[in-house]
Amino acid sequence: QVQLVESGGGLVQAGGSLRLSCVVSGVTFSTYTVGWFRQAPWKEREFVATTTRGGGSGFYADSVEGRFTISRDNAKNTVYLQMNSLQPDDTAVYYCAAMQGTWALSNPTSYDYWGQGTHVTVSS
Image 1: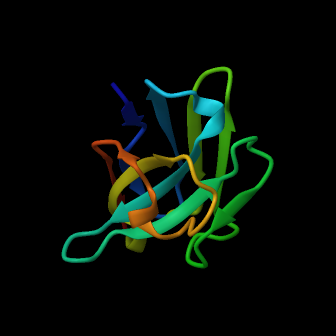
Image 2: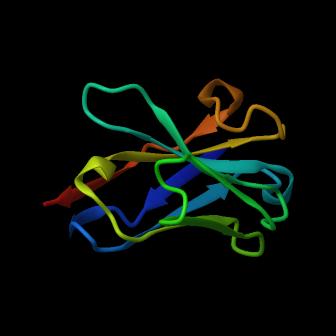
């Protein structure tokens, strides 16, 4: 059974930082692309970041480029999202997602498996 479990969300003031973690089980982790998406109230789910299978490259939405960093530890089956300089617009439920492909990385429909999400609230 494939499971993705996110953690690390919480309440933070604007300008602060959080690190999200996503532990993946039930698949050969190193063969999966894993990304982060977020969904704010009343908005559609949007792409945040994704990383290649080897973890050497990260791809980011324009809105988070330069503030967020995605990384992965294949030995721990874990993907991280370091979020710095957080702003109220970053408030959302953050989801990690996994797929075997390496295309259409920013399209949520490309991903096969999803976690339950972790809440991030940024106060002004």
